[in-house]
Length: 64
View 1 (cartoon, rainbow, N blue to C red):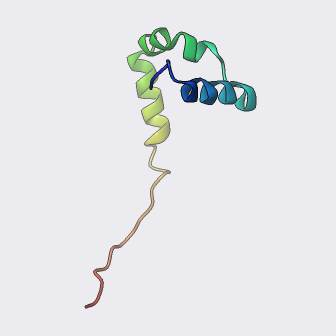
View 2 (tube, rainbow, N blue to C red):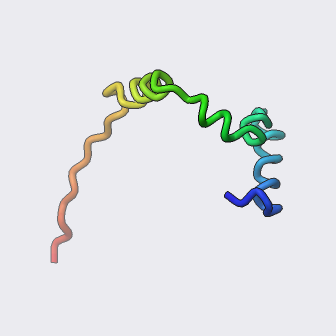
């Protein structure tokens, strides 16, 4: 992510305007990342890996 490029800021501004994102998340990125706790990571992992998000699939080799 290159904060000196216009493409970066165009994406940030679009995200703020169209998705109601908080501009402080970009402006204070280091603080936001440093404020993440182990408990935050555990809660997110429990949400994502609760066993309800499973897809079963079988790969069959192509017949030659």
